[in-house]
Length: 164
Image (cartoon, helix red, strand yellow):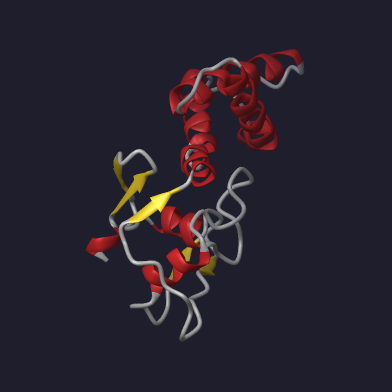
């Protein structure tokens, strides 16, 4: 597992992966139910998933809703890409997008404790996806920019609807 802790971008920049976090690992390798609506497919390519998960017989965790969920393990004989993995641009975008809904929800709960939880959850992912698109169009990148834009836009929309 230690060999899989780091990945590199095409330019050689090295990053650590939080594979000890079951939600991160589920997003990397794919799970029976997506972790969130922004990252629905496995982030890693099949040969990378096989390399990462080959040592395991089973990987299960509790999903956000508290129900058990499992990560499908590679079949014996699957092609394996040796670590360290080189992460492509589309994979990097998925890694950046992964924590956004949780970050935006956290910002909203801190800034607007009076918001109803169901109102936050109902609109959260739509605003996160819009935030990513808008920020990238404007040349702004990163979790902080996306989260702040989505939290502000969602707060304004909730106010307009009288939900806060």
